[in-house]
Length: 303
Image 1 (cartoon, one colour):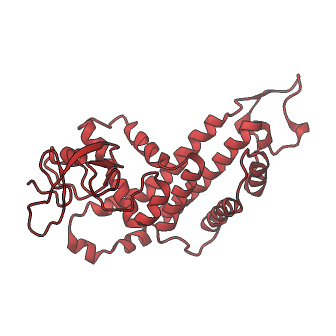
Image 2 (image 1 turned 30 degrees about the horizontal axis):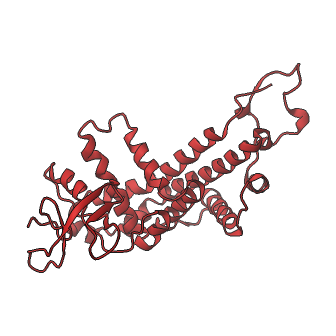
Image 3 (image 1 turned 90 degrees about the vertical axis):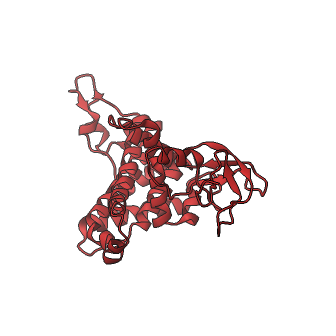
């Protein structure tokens, strides 16, 4: 008999783990660079030089992206039958009464074009040609990264975009961000310092994406309309200031985006906050969105 036959949930877990780690590898390079709070350092060591130095890490991210895509396709196939994944001839399967048990994971499974064709054959949805081309492009780029010697990666924007594209296609908009936050919070050390403060640190992922792929690309992967004026989030601002820190990131938006709205919604912490509409009294600030503690959410200054 064949033992330890995998389920869709098994492959879904692997898919998310691969895609999150692919994202995290690139994010950590950027995060380490931003730890140098020195404008002179940024001028002397441009970020593009750091990406160039970390091409091997970008390659690993690409490999994980490819593995995540393959795991997702296998999961879809398993919904129909896990035995469709097996490469061996049916006559070689240990399924007869006198057969010796064999673990599913020790048997050869399909990959590459065979996997793609099987995935398309069993998918319950009509798969667009654009999606097939995307999957095939990732496979070919991954093969070049592994087997070739010429450099193909020195800019993270394409791979970050592809990770988010894959995650959104597989699981829907916003899920990539929700799952990254869940993964971070599953760390046994998370919350050891301060749960609320650590929870809102996810804005750093949004800053990273704003810097690498830009807000216009990012909006394709979130449900909320983020094209519009951005404000400080009162909740995030409070948590950072409680630790004597400074927040420079703005991920709160008027909800709805109307001139007389009295609510701002933060896509980072997922909180609505009530605000007042009055002109900021600070020179050169034209903001008119003030939180209930009297802080201008445009410039961050107390009224």
